[in-house]
Amino acid sequence: MKSPRDVIIRPMVSEKSYAGLELNRYTFLVHPDSNKTEIREAVQAIWNVRVLTVNTMNRRGKVKRYRYTRGTQADQKLAVVTLAEGDSIEIFEQK
Image 1 (cartoon, rainbow, N blue to C red):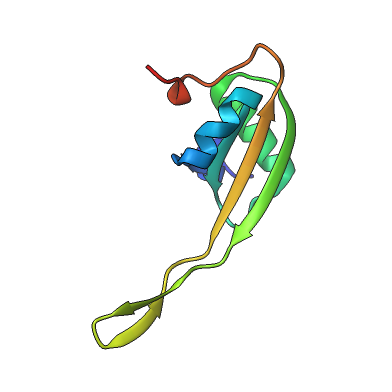
Image 2 (spheres, rainbow, N blue to C red):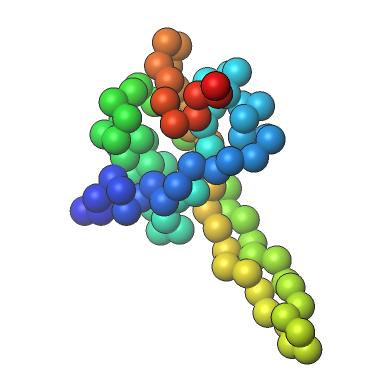
């Protein structure tokens, strides 16, 4: 059994993720081996909120040039979590 802090790596901060806040959707970078049930339980345990849906996507790492060689960035797994009406996560609140 994974710890909730091992499943959720960090929140994603981007214009697209902040646009989802109006719809009560939060985006997280999650462990590549985690499934939707583990993500749901981790978010509920860490922030004490009710999760309605979890959508996941695997993002392939980009090929980048490093001086004279090519390398690839690491693959990432993202989770878009929709919370119940009235629930929110404080770390995303805009000031």
